[in-house]
Image (tube, rainbow, N blue to C red; front, side, top):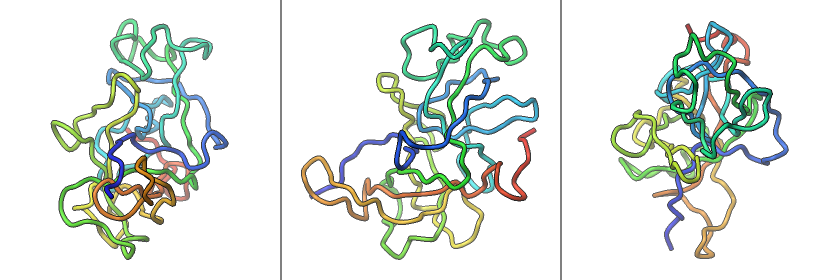
Length: 208
């Protein structure tokens, strides 16, 4: 039977028992659950829109809060930039917070896309870029009802070097909604790590 098609971005493995911290947001763009974020030179964070190549990331968004971390002012399940007042980085600094799974050793679950050649068990250890499923590979988008980012593994970008966004660790041991075991191929769920983490070794550098 087929793997369940349910793009939800990068889901922290062993959630909710994962290391995480709140960071003030400085962005004019929406941020969805399961989307990678980067630490800016200003000390604030913003969502990563290009999940490709050697892109530094601080971690993955797993929650949001408003002033004093009391929850967002609206019922949006994601950080809607239109809710920021006013929606400009310089005036909005510190107005919203994002909860980030920021441990450089944190593993995440993400599903495989359907383009190019399917990944196999032998793909474990290699690296891949991610893409936002939809109108364009890196046009930020997500589910406005669930708040999850429409992010998948771009299997057509698999490489054996460090020149990609995530490393494929292993196939996720889970069961599909139809009762079958998760397998390689379309919509297969993989456990990955951020390959270029800002809190790991020489990558401790803010994005300018």
